[in-house]
Image (cartoon, rainbow, N blue to C red; front, side, top):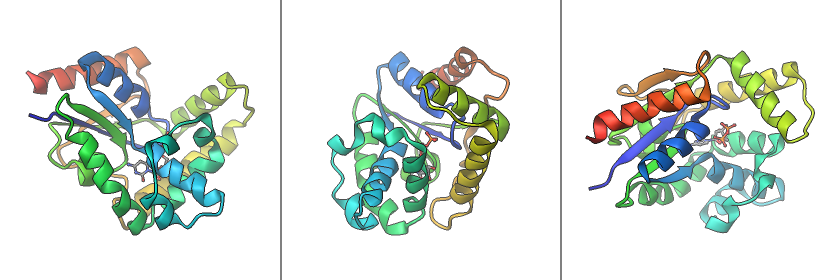
Length: 202
Ligand code: CDP
């Protein structure tokens, strides 16, 4: 029996941290699907055509700190609006979700498009201001400078692009559990997510 946990939500809401912690807690595999779009975005920045880059993606392309830059995030959210790019990445994600030891996938459309039958669907969100502050702190920890205003504008622009695109827009699945992390610590947010999974896993 497969067991899939789908975790969706906007940039910097905490879904990656929650997904990693849930996967570690239950001994499941974890896929950060944003990395797929980031890897395609990085190839496009290097001159590749988006659809061809998506079709040719290999697991090695998902590694490396270079995928974490704002420029790559921006390019990722642009290629993510191209239906052919999304279609080329579906099979890899569904195969991952079908692993017999269970899987946690985090992204934008896991509960709505990739794994609509997932046993657990969480929609992790937080106010744009909170998310911008967290991204600023993350960057500062890496020694990268930024201003709150610039990052807030980037968060809002990416939210708008991700929510308004025609194909697989960012939105909660009808049966998703909402988890607003604005006023929660990481530990509290993880504890709530773990409790949701435990309740359904039996
Ligand atoms: O970590 P952060 O939330 O900033 O970004 P990410 O999850 O790595 O995703 C980067 C971009 O990929 C997003 O802005 C989306 O446009 C796109 N994406 C998507 O369309 N569908 C997914 N399942 C995951 C990411």
